[in-house]
Picture 1: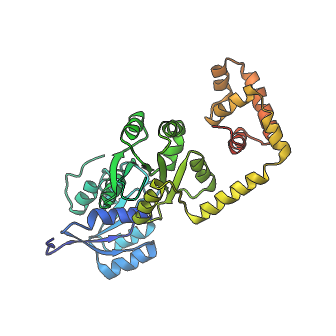
Picture 2: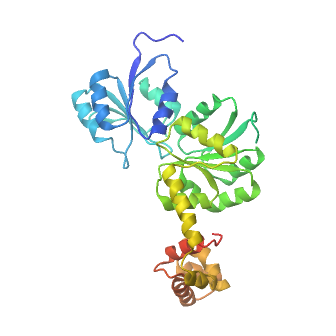
Picture 3: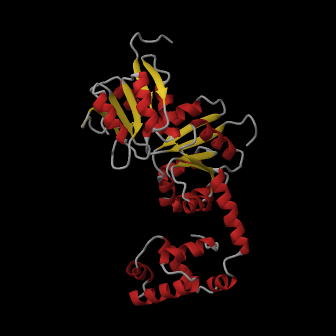
Length: 127
Length: 221
């Protein structure tokens, strides 16, 4: 498998563990995507962002479609970073935050949805 | 099921990402074949029965409990089928309700994909798996049962009249007195009296608790 020269750098930080494994299974075979880290909690996430400088962080969406609090401070410090938030308990919730308080519409939570979000495709399939 | 057999697994999840990725993870195992669906519909149940499925893996305990009647029907039709639930719910009573529905594999989402795979294989062998803490609760629950609810209370429960017993499943479904009255062609006041007597006989304060007492005592709800 050839590896892209400038792969998309992704930090996988979503919970629970099963959803993290699911996301890893979805993106780990992609030649243009590099998993720069995998963390289990929010404190680790903030540190890992500083250590690994990812292009994207994938997190779990909280109840009421909220991002984990730490994401807002990360976006403040790194406005160029993208955060993808995935709900594990619903059919169709995947948000892509592009900067503070600005985010894309809800799109379908699927392997294709995750990959399209990471590749910045504008024509993401809507739920 | 013997060593070397293929395990036919049916994944039910509303979350397409989970459905797709779990299917892909399972397909990498040489001994597992996969079908998927997004809900416990009648069509899904038919497909499960027709396809020789060994294990149904469902990612929502709520979906399972909401469709309890369909699940019971499924187990009656396919008695060798094994049910595995993957969920966030660590509540003991929810776990117990799942067990009473015939779930033999209970995996929390804090488990890894490998753990889920192992739970599927365990269920296919006709064995059970659940987190140790819930296993402990289950053992304690059974022990409490053999100690028995207070004997007098059990006797009272056995004294529920046929009509009172008929009301219990309707209470379990959350029907109001008015709805039960319409269903059984009774007056609302008569239903109220029945409910009052059921509460007295089961020794609890509310109708949901009465349902739980009856369920615990083995009434098929």
